[in-house]
Amino acid sequence: MGELFRSEEMTLAQLFLQSEAAYCCVSELGELGKVQFRDLNPDVNVFQRKFVNEVRRCEEMDRKLRFVEKEIRKANIPIMDTGENPEVPFPRDMIDLEANFEKIENELKEINTNQEALKRNFLELTELKFILRKTQQFFDEMADPDLLEESSSLLEPSEMGRGTPLRLGFVAGVINRERIPTFERMLWRVCRGNVFLRQAEIENPLEDPVTVRQGDCVLGSRSCKGSPEQAVLFPFRLRFKGHVQ
Image (cartoon, rainbow, N blue to C red; front, side, top):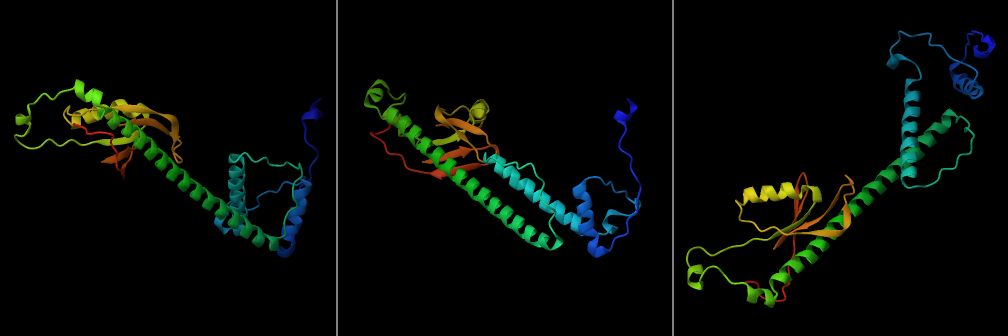
């Protein structure tokens, strides 16, 4: 039974190869898969060893191949597995492989950048579309004659003319749903309670192309799209069906 757990008999050998033939000979031995190399210079620094540049080039190409594979899987493109290992390329073919891998990587990065920019523009336009629709509904409700007849001002017209004129501002924007309570408390403190906040849910969740986060509430002239880091203003015009008093 002890023979089942023992490896095959191995022989320690020393090979002397010319520099010109070392690559081809080592590649053939690697294809056989029956040779294990020992490091005869363990104390030598990695940067002082021979063939370091070639190994780095191979590692860089391997990184590019992993990037291409990642993009392929992200796009749900099936990868055919032939079950066979490709033959080792010759040193003169390394330059062509490097150029092809570099070209493919740059093209994929450019495609990703353009796709991200398109998604970001689409997200901003979609947010602006929902903002225009929701704010128009808000102002249409305020301009409803039936509602105006049931409401009256607390101040007399003579009293309203005294002092500085009343200036009201309106800001609308899109924010993540879980951030609404915090945002509402902040507005209440900043405006000292002189704020009227209305909100409406967006039917279709909006997904950020970078962070893949969703914001699906509209807060209600300019529109302010709030984000954790910054705020972007969108100027637009509102059309009213009546006069707002």
